Each structure stands twice: as structure tokens, then as C-alpha cells.
Amino acid sequence: MEKAWRFAVVTMSDKGSRGERLDESGAFLRQFLTQAGFTEAGYRLVPDRVEAIVEAVYAMIDLGADLVITSGGTGLAPSDVTPEAMDRVFQREVPGIAEMLRLESLKKTPMAALSRGRAGVRGESLIINLPGSLKAARENIAAALPILDHALAKIKGDPSDCGQG
Image 1 (cartoon, rainbow, N blue to C red):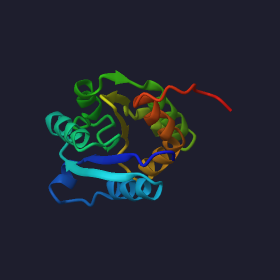
Image 2 (image 1 turned 30 degrees about the vertical axis):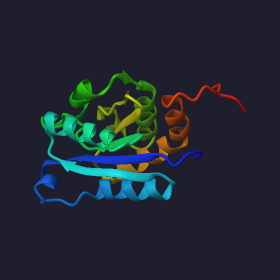
Image 3 (image 1 turned 180 degrees about the vertical axis):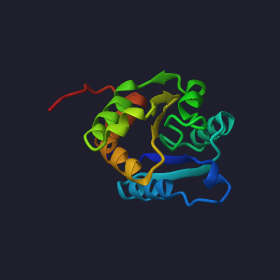
Image 4 (image 1 turned 45 degrees about the vertical axis):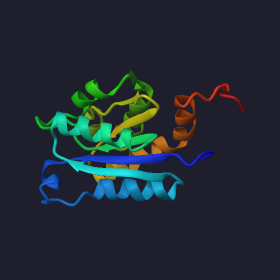
């Protein structure tokens, strides 16, 4: 990594927010990104509710997170509303990131086709939605890691050309 980027994790889980389930994916993502050289700016565990998700992501951006990773709420269950919350969060969508993550996951399971995770930008922050399962979160963040430094630099206005070398 060229710069010490700040990250935040927001996990969506009704059971987790009630203390009925441990947030394994959120804990893993926080550890993984810290080990990758990022600095933690914040963490939230919220219920699967659009208002709670929007408020939590905004709060993480307000804390200075360059990267906000969300975990959970990307499937087909009635309570999975993370993509709908992103309609209120994103100023610009980055569909290639979500497409890449689904493509990588499809190599492991056809169920990845059911993921509705998205990626986008708000201000100078990149937001990436990951599935809530520990296995999927682990696979997805590993797939995204190689592009994060470049993506964040571009969002911040880095004028260098893409694709050199």
C-alpha cells in the first residue's frame, strides 16, 4: 500500500445487533484490513434496516474512513436490504467491483449468483458490500485487496495514468 488508508466495517445482522450471534465476518474483516496495513476508523453492528444502515455508513464516512466495507444483507431474504440502502448512500456506482467479487465467488459456488452486493463512492470514500458469511467475506475481501490502493488513490484525485506497467 502506498498510503495508510483508513477503513471502517459496518455489519448488518438482526441477530448480531440483538446480541444473539457473534459478528465473525466483521471481526475477520477488521483483522484482515489491519494486517493489510489499513488503519481502523470505526465499526458498527446494526440491524437489517435501511435507516440504520444508511446512518452507520454516513457515520463511518464522517469518521474519516476512506474505505467502508459492509458485511451482510446482500442476499434474497426479505430482511436483506443493504443494496436498497446503498441507493441512498452512493453518489457514483462502481459496478466492476461487485462484478469482480461475484465472478470470483462463482468459481467456488453457484450460490454467488444470488448476491446483490454493490460498490460505490460517496464523497472521497469507497463503499463495498460483502456477504455476511465469514467464508464469503474472507474470499471477497481477498479478491478486492489488490485493487483497493489504486481505487482509493483515484477517488482522492490521483492524476497518474491507469494501467501502466
